[in-house]
Image 1 (cartoon, protein in one colour):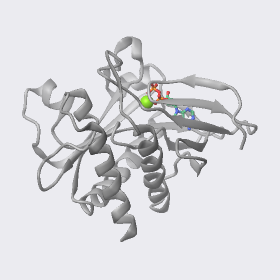
Image 2: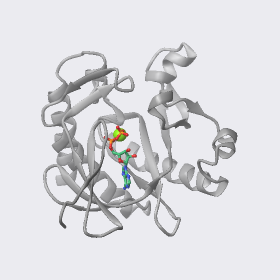
Image 3: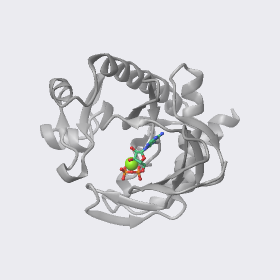
Length: 239
Ligand code: ADP
Ligand code: MG
Protein backbone atom coordinates (compact mmCIF):
# COMPACT_ATOMS: atom_id res chain seq x y z
CA UNK A 1 0.00 0.00 0.00
CA UNK A 2 1.60 3.30 -1.01
CA UNK A 3 1.96 6.16 1.42
CA UNK A 4 0.54 9.42 0.05
CA UNK A 5 0.16 12.84 1.66
CA UNK A 6 0.67 13.52 5.36
CA UNK A 7 -2.82 14.24 6.69
CA UNK A 8 -2.01 14.88 10.34
CA UNK A 9 1.00 14.96 12.59
CA UNK A 10 0.05 14.31 16.20
CA UNK A 11 2.13 14.06 19.34
CA UNK A 12 3.01 10.38 18.90
CA UNK A 13 2.11 9.44 15.33
CA UNK A 14 1.90 10.69 11.78
CA UNK A 15 -1.16 9.82 9.72
CA UNK A 16 -0.89 9.41 5.93
CA UNK A 17 -3.43 8.94 3.16
CA UNK A 18 -3.14 5.88 0.93
CA UNK A 19 -4.39 5.01 -2.57
CA UNK A 20 -7.57 3.69 -0.90
CA UNK A 21 -9.88 6.38 0.51
CA UNK A 22 -11.00 3.98 3.26
CA UNK A 23 -7.47 3.22 4.54
CA UNK A 24 -4.74 5.21 6.28
CA UNK A 25 -1.16 4.54 7.27
CA UNK A 26 -0.15 5.48 10.81
CA UNK A 27 3.54 5.92 11.54
CA UNK A 28 4.69 5.77 15.15
CA UNK A 29 7.30 8.28 16.35
CA UNK A 30 9.65 8.19 19.33
CA UNK A 31 8.40 11.62 20.45
CA UNK A 32 6.95 11.62 23.94
CA UNK A 33 4.80 14.31 25.49
CA UNK A 34 3.05 14.58 28.84
CA UNK A 35 0.68 16.97 30.59
CA UNK A 36 -0.95 17.85 27.25
CA UNK A 37 2.30 18.65 25.49
CA UNK A 38 3.76 20.81 28.28
CA UNK A 39 6.55 18.26 28.79
CA UNK A 40 8.35 17.10 25.67
CA UNK A 41 11.01 14.50 25.04
CA UNK A 42 11.83 11.37 23.19
CA UNK A 43 11.93 7.68 24.12
CA UNK A 44 14.33 5.77 21.85
CA UNK A 45 12.60 2.86 20.12
CA UNK A 46 9.16 3.68 21.58
CA UNK A 47 7.52 3.98 18.16
CA UNK A 48 8.61 0.47 17.22
CA UNK A 49 7.31 -0.99 20.49
CA UNK A 50 4.00 0.90 20.46
CA UNK A 51 3.32 -0.06 16.84
CA UNK A 52 3.95 -3.73 17.48
CA UNK A 53 2.17 -3.86 20.85
CA UNK A 54 -0.93 -2.04 19.65
CA UNK A 55 -1.17 -4.35 16.63
CA UNK A 56 -0.75 -7.55 18.66
CA UNK A 57 -3.36 -6.40 21.19
CA UNK A 58 -5.86 -5.32 18.51
CA UNK A 59 -5.48 -8.70 16.75
CA UNK A 60 -6.38 -10.38 20.04
CA UNK A 61 -9.31 -8.03 20.63
CA UNK A 62 -10.68 -8.76 17.14
CA UNK A 63 -10.67 -12.44 18.11
CA UNK A 64 -12.79 -11.63 21.16
CA UNK A 65 -15.32 -9.87 18.90
CA UNK A 66 -14.31 -6.23 19.40
CA UNK A 67 -13.98 -4.50 16.01
CA UNK A 68 -10.80 -2.44 15.54
CA UNK A 69 -9.20 -0.28 12.86
CA UNK A 70 -6.21 -2.65 12.52
CA UNK A 71 -5.65 -4.03 9.02
CA UNK A 72 -1.99 -4.97 8.59
CA UNK A 73 1.46 -4.16 9.94
CA UNK A 74 3.53 -2.67 7.13
CA UNK A 75 6.89 -2.11 8.82
CA UNK A 76 8.51 -1.60 12.22
CA UNK A 77 6.76 1.75 12.64
CA UNK A 78 3.92 1.71 10.11
CA UNK A 79 0.49 0.12 10.13
CA UNK A 80 -2.39 0.11 7.68
CA UNK A 81 -5.67 0.97 9.43
CA UNK A 82 -9.28 1.60 8.50
CA UNK A 83 -9.99 5.32 8.27
CA UNK A 84 -12.58 6.46 10.75
CA UNK A 85 -14.16 9.73 11.85
CA UNK A 86 -12.79 9.88 15.38
CA UNK A 87 -15.33 10.38 18.18
CA UNK A 88 -13.60 13.27 19.99
CA UNK A 89 -13.53 11.53 23.37
CA UNK A 90 -10.83 9.88 25.42
CA UNK A 91 -12.46 6.83 26.98
CA UNK A 92 -10.67 5.93 30.20
CA UNK A 93 -11.17 2.65 32.06
CA UNK A 94 -9.63 2.16 35.50
CA UNK A 95 -9.15 -0.89 37.71
CA UNK A 96 -6.86 0.73 40.31
CA UNK A 97 -6.56 4.37 41.45
CA UNK A 98 -3.71 6.33 39.87
CA UNK A 99 -2.89 9.52 38.00
CA UNK A 100 -5.64 12.11 37.59
CA UNK A 101 -8.13 9.96 39.55
CA UNK A 102 -5.91 9.94 42.65
CA UNK A 103 -5.21 13.66 42.27
CA UNK A 104 -8.84 14.70 41.64
CA UNK A 105 -10.25 12.84 44.63
CA UNK A 106 -7.24 13.24 46.96
CA UNK A 107 -6.62 9.52 47.38
CA UNK A 108 -3.47 7.45 47.15
CA UNK A 109 -2.55 5.44 44.08
CA UNK A 110 -3.01 1.67 44.21
CA UNK A 111 -6.57 1.37 45.59
CA UNK A 112 -8.01 -1.69 43.84
CA UNK A 113 -11.61 -0.98 42.79
CA UNK A 114 -14.31 -3.60 43.36
CA UNK A 115 -15.44 -3.00 39.75
CA UNK A 116 -13.85 -1.12 36.86
CA UNK A 117 -14.78 2.54 36.29
CA UNK A 118 -15.23 4.47 33.07
CA UNK A 119 -14.94 8.17 32.34
CA UNK A 120 -14.75 10.38 29.28
CA UNK A 121 -12.76 13.45 28.44
CA UNK A 122 -13.39 15.77 25.54
CA UNK A 123 -10.44 15.44 23.13
CA UNK A 124 -9.58 19.12 22.74
CA UNK A 125 -5.96 20.20 23.28
CA UNK A 126 -6.87 23.90 23.55
CA UNK A 127 -9.13 23.06 26.53
CA UNK A 128 -6.69 20.50 28.05
CA UNK A 129 -9.06 17.54 27.37
CA UNK A 130 -11.64 18.34 30.11
CA UNK A 131 -13.60 15.60 31.85
CA UNK A 132 -17.08 15.39 30.27
CA UNK A 133 -20.30 13.71 31.43
CA UNK A 134 -22.77 11.86 29.19
CA UNK A 135 -25.43 14.62 29.15
CA UNK A 136 -22.81 17.11 27.97
CA UNK A 137 -21.59 14.65 25.29
CA UNK A 138 -25.19 14.56 24.02
CA UNK A 139 -25.69 18.33 24.39
CA UNK A 140 -22.60 18.98 22.27
CA UNK A 141 -23.61 16.29 19.77
CA UNK A 142 -20.26 14.50 20.12
CA UNK A 143 -21.90 11.05 20.01
CA UNK A 144 -25.39 9.59 20.22
CA UNK A 145 -26.82 7.59 23.14
CA UNK A 146 -26.65 4.45 21.06
CA UNK A 147 -23.00 5.11 20.16
CA UNK A 148 -22.12 5.69 23.82
CA UNK A 149 -23.77 2.39 24.79
CA UNK A 150 -21.61 0.63 22.18
CA UNK A 151 -18.49 2.50 23.28
CA UNK A 152 -19.07 1.53 26.94
CA UNK A 153 -19.70 -2.11 26.04
CA UNK A 154 -16.53 -2.28 23.92
CA UNK A 155 -14.42 -0.40 26.48
CA UNK A 156 -15.40 -2.77 29.30
CA UNK A 157 -14.87 -5.70 26.92
CA UNK A 158 -11.36 -4.44 26.14
CA UNK A 159 -10.73 -4.17 29.88
CA UNK A 160 -11.93 -7.71 30.62
CA UNK A 161 -9.67 -9.11 27.95
CA UNK A 162 -6.59 -6.95 28.60
CA UNK A 163 -6.76 -7.31 32.38
CA UNK A 164 -6.53 -11.10 32.07
CA UNK A 165 -3.95 -10.97 29.32
CA UNK A 166 -1.64 -8.65 31.28
CA UNK A 167 -2.19 -10.69 34.44
CA UNK A 168 -0.83 -13.71 32.54
CA UNK A 169 2.31 -11.60 31.93
CA UNK A 170 2.69 -10.77 35.64
CA UNK A 171 1.41 -7.25 34.97
CA UNK A 172 -1.45 -5.32 36.62
CA UNK A 173 -3.55 -3.29 34.20
CA UNK A 174 -4.18 -0.16 36.28
CA UNK A 175 -5.93 2.01 33.68
CA UNK A 176 -5.92 2.87 29.99
CA UNK A 177 -7.31 5.30 27.41
CA UNK A 178 -9.11 4.32 24.22
CA UNK A 179 -10.34 6.24 21.20
CA UNK A 180 -13.21 5.10 19.01
CA UNK A 181 -14.27 6.11 15.51
CA UNK A 182 -17.03 5.70 12.97
CA UNK A 183 -16.65 3.78 9.74
CA UNK A 184 -18.24 5.39 6.65
CA UNK A 185 -21.42 3.36 7.19
CA UNK A 186 -21.58 4.61 10.78
CA UNK A 187 -20.58 1.65 12.91
CA UNK A 188 -18.25 2.20 15.87
CA UNK A 189 -14.82 0.56 15.99
CA UNK A 190 -11.80 0.84 18.27
CA UNK A 191 -9.12 3.13 16.75
CA UNK A 192 -5.86 4.86 17.71
CA UNK A 193 -3.47 2.76 19.83
CA UNK A 194 -3.11 0.60 22.94
CA UNK A 195 0.41 0.93 24.28
CA UNK A 196 2.45 1.87 27.35
CA UNK A 197 1.84 5.51 26.28
CA UNK A 198 -1.89 5.05 26.81
CA UNK A 199 -1.97 2.47 29.64
CA UNK A 200 -0.68 2.15 33.20
CA UNK A 201 1.01 -1.21 33.62
CA UNK A 202 2.55 -2.19 36.94
CA UNK A 203 4.71 -5.24 37.58
CA UNK A 204 2.40 -7.26 39.82
CA UNK A 205 5.22 -8.66 41.98
CA UNK A 206 7.25 -5.47 42.55
CA UNK A 207 4.83 -2.65 41.73
CA UNK A 208 7.39 -1.24 39.29
CA UNK A 209 5.88 1.03 36.64
CA UNK A 210 6.31 -0.29 33.10
CA UNK A 211 4.67 2.60 31.22
CA UNK A 212 4.86 6.29 30.31
CA UNK A 213 4.65 7.37 33.97
CA UNK A 214 8.42 6.70 34.06
CA UNK A 215 8.78 9.56 31.54
CA UNK A 216 6.07 11.79 33.09
CA UNK A 217 7.60 11.49 36.56
CA UNK A 218 11.31 11.38 35.59
CA UNK A 219 11.73 7.95 37.15
CA UNK A 220 14.49 6.89 34.73
CA UNK A 221 14.75 3.56 32.95
CA UNK A 222 12.10 4.61 30.45
CA UNK A 223 13.45 2.73 27.41
CA UNK A 224 14.11 -0.33 29.58
CA UNK A 225 10.52 -0.34 30.87
CA UNK A 226 9.09 -0.21 27.33
CA UNK A 227 11.42 -3.05 26.28
CA UNK A 228 10.47 -5.08 29.37
CA UNK A 229 6.72 -4.78 28.84
CA UNK A 230 7.08 -5.71 25.15
CA UNK A 231 9.18 -8.76 26.02
CA UNK A 232 6.53 -9.86 28.56
CA UNK A 233 3.89 -9.69 25.82
CA UNK A 234 6.06 -11.63 23.38
CA UNK A 235 6.87 -14.26 25.99
CA UNK A 236 3.14 -14.73 26.63
CA UNK A 237 2.53 -15.05 22.88
CA UNK A 238 5.18 -17.76 22.62
CA UNK A 239 3.22 -19.54 25.37
P1 ADP B 1 -2.61 13.23 19.23
O1 ADP B 1 -1.47 14.16 19.40
O2 ADP B 1 -3.88 13.91 18.80
O3 ADP B 1 -2.80 12.26 20.37
P2 ADP B 1 -1.41 11.04 17.73
O4 ADP B 1 0.03 11.41 17.62
O5 ADP B 1 -1.82 9.99 18.68
O6 ADP B 1 -2.30 12.36 17.94
O7 ADP B 1 -1.87 10.74 16.23
C1 ADP B 1 -2.95 9.98 15.91
C2 ADP B 1 -4.14 10.83 15.47
O8 ADP B 1 -4.91 10.08 14.55
C3 ADP B 1 -5.07 11.13 16.64
O9 ADP B 1 -5.63 12.42 16.47
C4 ADP B 1 -6.14 10.04 16.54
O10 ADP B 1 -7.37 10.49 17.07
C5 ADP B 1 -6.22 9.84 15.04
N1 ADP B 1 -6.58 8.47 14.63
C6 ADP B 1 -6.24 7.30 15.21
N2 ADP B 1 -6.72 6.24 14.54
C7 ADP B 1 -7.39 6.75 13.47
C8 ADP B 1 -8.12 6.16 12.38
N3 ADP B 1 -8.24 4.84 12.27
N4 ADP B 1 -8.70 7.00 11.48
C9 ADP B 1 -8.57 8.35 11.62
N5 ADP B 1 -7.89 8.96 12.60
C10 ADP B 1 -7.29 8.18 13.53
MG1 MG C 1 -2.61 10.25 20.62
